[in-house]
Length: 155
Length: 264
View (spheres, rainbow over the protein chains, first blue to last red):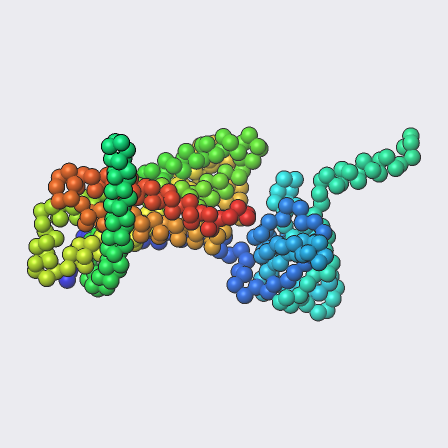
């Protein structure tokens, strides 16, 4: 069997294809963001998750450290149970506060982690005790109007 | 009364014929996979088919990818700009291409460019009784003719879809950044932040592989199954193009509803 020009063309074709895949993987996608292959899972309960979605980022100090795995409703406490996986490189104290925040005015919602001061770190399956709910605009406006009504007249 | 009975009879015969063909196609697919070992060992046969269905489709894929990307850039900017988020153009172009347009449009082009050619070739081979002659010489036409064309298509299709997507993003960049003047940094950085490797790129790749299998199977089967007449070949080619397009769009809906459930 001898080489033919056909083989050359197929070779060029495959190289272009691999080049396109590499371009997509390196330039378009984000392979290097967070590797969650052996991530550890922590849970937290929130009074209100607002518009949080599955796969929303978990950030600490603005850096993505993990993603939201699942959101369910706990019928015992009537709160939202959020399960998130955090990349194994990042360790957080046990008294870390999880709050649901919004990036920008109309941006997506994410979970922000504020580390506490505990010496022990969170491990797989732990639960975050301190949580802060999402800000619901209607409730905020309602509270504001209520405060206004309660304030002394002429203020 | 006679007319009604005729309609019922017609419906029944169409249904039975359809089931018959479906069953035959399934058996054909299994036999094709069984006989693939032989054709993969003689790899030059498959390489030849990659040349015919892949390399020769390169031009149409590159050109249409570029144009689709440029249209996406223009239309996307026009819409996004109304909401004051023209900087998100990169996200829109990249996500629509990697998830949907790349695999689907490349698959449709591949079906009409390469699938029809494969059907015509095999159909003519059948009409001129070359397949029977091979059988007489103890050469299995499934292993010698059908399997290399099938695998050539299956290998070419994901590569073509990747090239289409890359060209489309380039076209979107050309229109958005070079012509309209969207910020270069925002275009790429927002795109990189929004496109996930596993969720978007890998799922798009899986789609293109599935479409490659569907189109190649339909093309090879229609050629093999055609009536050995000039009219039969032309009907088989029509059925290949129509059937592939329907299969791609239906499979795309099924795969999309599995992969992207609107959670993000």
